[in-house]
Length: 272
Ligand code: SF4
Ligand code: SF4
Ligand code: SF4
Image 1 (cartoon, rainbow, N blue to C red):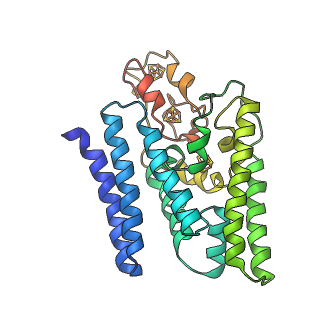
Image 2: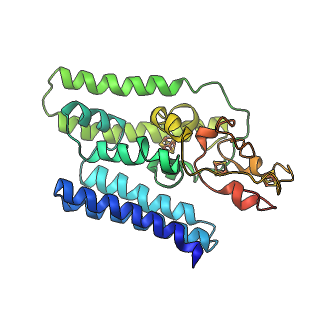
Image 3: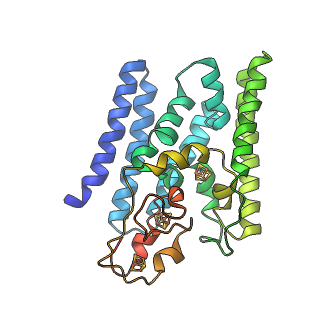
């Protein structure tokens, strides 16, 4: 039963968040929301333990579609970075701000870029494309993320300070249009650069939060140097080009690890 400790701990962690937010905000939605996400993630970990090869995809679909379709389209919550800025400007600690705090700002201090591997609705689609690992060397284009990040902030600030009417409606439509643009850019870039995760590496503005916070992540994959035979298989299967055999926090592309576990699954010596 020891192998089920991790899913149990994860479920407990999410239930703690669910109950705390439910009671402090007096809103049953938080109990439902975080319980659902916790159950979906723990279920995925159980599938992984049972060696089901699509375990991660199951979690991506369960969490990603819930966020995109239910929270975004049905409930009208802008869960993109624009929604986060919007709630910050209004001073309301609700949906998008809580989502960012848990999944993308403070959460990565514990579980790194787990969001990117298991919950993001953009990557949920990109991961179905044919280029699971990059077929060409990495480009020096990471600076684009800062422009997109600043653009999203300027967009929401301009809306907010110009006191336009129906701002809630604009935020809803910006969620839909923003997602269409992200999907189109992500798919196009993946096909041109032959790399499913090119959007994550160069464009995604959320990585401005995710990368520095995940640098300090508690949960990281480490290499047992006594077992490693330097065969290089782990690097060949890594979608994010992480130098996972280097145990230092400064390892190459270390803040890009999405905890997909491909390296762990493919290591012939169980060194990871
Ligand atoms: S980098 Fe951005 S698009 Fe890629 S998985 Fe993470 S949040 Fe999603
Ligand atoms: S796959 Fe395993 S044995 Fe091979 S280099 Fe990576 S950690 Fe070492
Ligand atoms: S293959 Fe390993 S190092 Fe690469 S992203 Fe997945 S878990 Fe991280």
